[in-house]
Amino acid sequence: MSRSLVIGAVVAGALAIVGLSSVFTVDMTQQAMVLQFGDPKQVVSEPGLHFKLPFVQNVVYIDKRVLNVDAPAEELIAADQKRVVIDAFARWRIVDPLLYYQRLRTQETARRQLATFISSSLRDVIGRQPLTALLIDPRETTRGSMRAEVLRNLSQQVNEKAKENGIEVVDVRIRRADLPEANSQAIFQRMRTEREQEAKLIRATGQEAAQKRRSEADREATVIIANAQRDSDIRRGEGEAEASKIFSDAFGSDPKFFAFYRSMQAYRAVLTDKTTTMVLSPDSDFFRYLDNIAGMVGGSAPAK
Image 1 (spheres, one colour):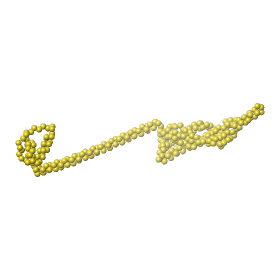
Image 2 (cartoon, one colour):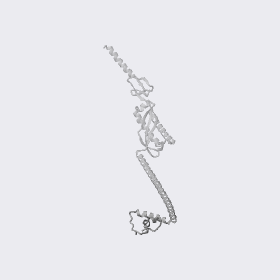
Image 3 (cartoon, one colour):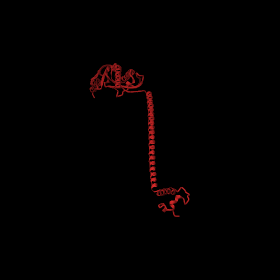
């Protein structure tokens, strides 16, 4: 290989390196800061291919999208002296790349700075509002407007502080507002005690009502049984009176047959009872109808 070819290849390689070091591209989601020996020289916001001085200038890319930052949850004291744990987050973007780079340089530093701003603003805003302003019932527009006012004041305060660093805070939101764990346990225990007392009261009221219904039912049953017993005694008395009247009429119309009928009933009651022993004289008047069957109807003297 000739010397001229080697020199040409070296020159071409050097030109290629210089050319590549002279261009850079900017994405639609980025903006570029051109630095010369560490000093900012140019801010490029338009996407596409751009040029810079090779070797003496370098490019730092800065995100121009809306970014998120989560502030650490912390316990604060509201205006009514009630403690509350606030978990907040913010959405932000870089609007002044030069100022941002001079003050913060990296997103990690920016996030730490914003978290500090959010924390201090939370203490100021929450300290001037009661706890009820943070707790929203969807049916209550008053509390909703109070919470919106709290968030608006919070966003304004954080944004005012962040502007000094070339950052615009789009919004600050409270993700969660809870009572501290100790307070939550105490409130839970109090609510549990109240529910247990309410349950005992309901049970006692139910038992009292049940006892009352049971007493009324027993009283009604006693009255019904007494009325039924009275009616049955009346019906029985009327039946016995009717039976006595029938017997009396029968005796008056045919005394002999009535005496015979009563004797037959006595025989049935006595002679069918196998557990009773009777000792009677054979000529007792009790057996007069058994001595002479014919005498039961005709009434003649019994045959010996």
